[in-house]
Length: 401
Image (cartoon, rainbow, N blue to C red):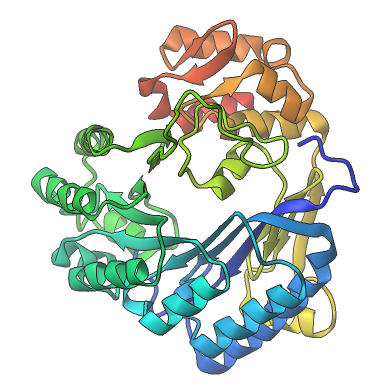
């Protein structure tokens, strides 16, 4: 992204690595929580925030995990008061991920009082057997109860996170979950196909032959997701993400999501923080395992909570690796990420963000994808087709330099 060094970074991601228990499909860095380590992590996180605060003016903040809602009231107060002292509150969009088993009225009120205005709730399924299959700690009843608590606390921007192609999940069970999710009338919906990642119990079960993968059924479930979400008033704006558009005069152009990040073709209740990722924007990443991307330099923190705390207690950032990307490589990654979005890349927007011309540097790759039926190209933009979105990862690889 074309930022000058005197512009402060407008996006902040915070990784909270603790969970009540590890889910069988999860490959993110997370661990079972223990009281003393969580307290130590909170102290280290506050130090890390103070180190980068001068270069931050957040318009979007995202606490992900792990399970951020696992932090207790006192721990949340310490984090939020530190953010207040460092002038990191007041973001236009401030998201916290929640597990339905860890939402209380007191916690919801505290978050709302400090300006958190968006919650992403990890539902995954509304079928009890599948929740057990995934190793989730919540029940379907907890989903509805937590949703009501969040609404009662004043949250008017809630995302529901669902999974499909779960082992033993049938199409009727998936349709039931979609019907119930639509009836909840959330503002946003995210839905991901189960991925079998190395070093997860689910991958080991697949290798052991405990179940098989049905790719045709997974494709059918994805089509059903798009059909039901669209019928339910959502607009798909990225492979796995759907949002409502609450703008009355839809002809009125939306303001840029972030400075330099165009909102072309994006519904008004899309997750601005994630759009910033897909459009190649800068962001700070704090917490164990978090990645950051600031002025062309990608950093990654240590994926070890103990080591993370030790480094910060010594007054150092807990950065494991740092890499400066060449302008062309940055532009290639930005092209690849942006193609995940239905709007694709308007050529003028891409040039504004990267200072590279998609038509000049990637002409052969674009032609190749159009010939495969994966993409369409007009005078104004390049975007993946409906079929191409299913192969977005393969398409992305063509643009990397």
